[in-house]
Amino acid sequence: MQIKVMTFNIHHGMGLDKRLDLDRISKLIQSSEADLIGLNEVDNRFSKRSLFSDQAAQLAKTLDMDYVFGSAIKVGQHGASPRQYGNALVSRFPIINTVNHPFDFLPGLIEDRALLEANVDIGNRLIAIFVAHLSFAPLLHQKQTEFILKKVQRNKNLSIVMGDWNMKPFSRSWRLVTRHLKDVDSFESKNDTYPSRRPSKKLDFIFTSEQIEVIEASVCLDDILASDHLPYMATLNIK
Image 1 (cartoon, rainbow, N blue to C red):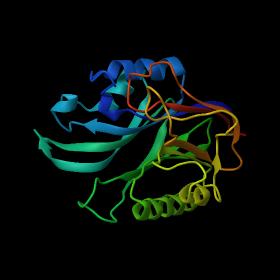
Image 2: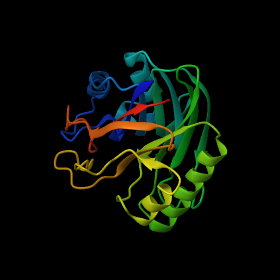
Image 3: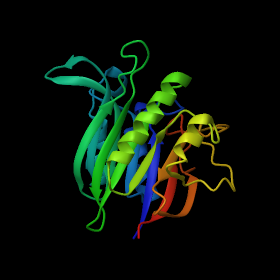
Image 4: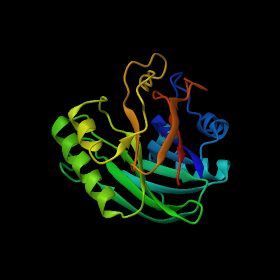
């Protein structure tokens, strides 16, 4: 069964033109025909910057997909709801169960990050989906990478791991991940994702279990102003 997977840091819907526009994010996802979309920097009634909206719910409703949100930061209340910021998974397939894993290595000292884990029913088979946003700090990055790999190994289903990893290909953390998982990028062409207007770095990655076949992978250039990152996509074959 072939599926399309996208990882996208949406910068809380704020584009390079300084315009908050979640509709263009949904249009970009819709035109890509992605089946599974891992999102980073998603606001959930977080602040005025995103009009206190529940962005994951809004996108899922527009796209008519299932979704789950996982908080990395909580800062009080907006009315009866907690103000949150983190990761989300939007899925054309049913999301069966989920757990959110905050990275609590140095809480409150730097921006908190998290890993969202979900089992998704794809063609009557459960596939483990992980959406992560990692720190720039080298020591924290290594701890977070090791934490993610432990969670992947504990989930016995085939895995797809994606997100804004804030690392370079062939870095120490990348080498650690690729001892256990396959990078969908063949590196035959340049797939830099940041900054979106003139990308010079690849920060966003998709990794899979070895048994999942990679058909192709590329950045999506449909709307380079939608966020400060470009979406990164892969077509996969789950046997």
